[in-house]
Amino acid sequence: MILINFIALWVSYFYFNAKLTDSNGDEVPVHDAIHHFFTSPWWLDLWQSLKDVWVFAQHHGWYETWKQVIDLSDPHGEINAHKVNFH
Image 1 (tube, rainbow, N blue to C red):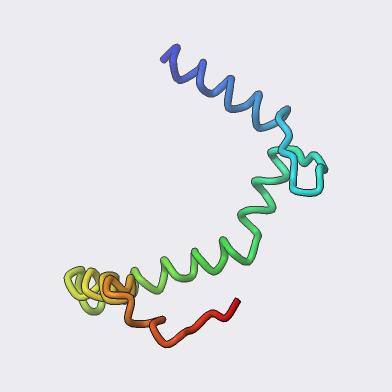
Image 2 (tube, rainbow, N blue to C red):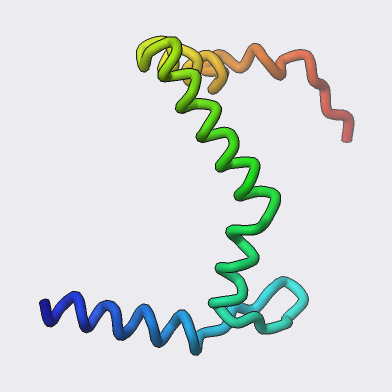
């Protein structure tokens, strides 16, 4: 119980007092950065993707979901093989 209180104390300290520095050198409080992260388009798109995977798994089963994950991870590099980068 003491360990949990100790961890909670440190998490609370960092949440309210720590600051992050962005690429422009501006400091942002951690509690604001966390709030902005969970309202960012990146997080909302990820959350929607996780919901879509859950619905797919419920309808098709986890084995089919795993097969989709393997196919979409492109283990042979065939999906983007037609793209050519000119530098």
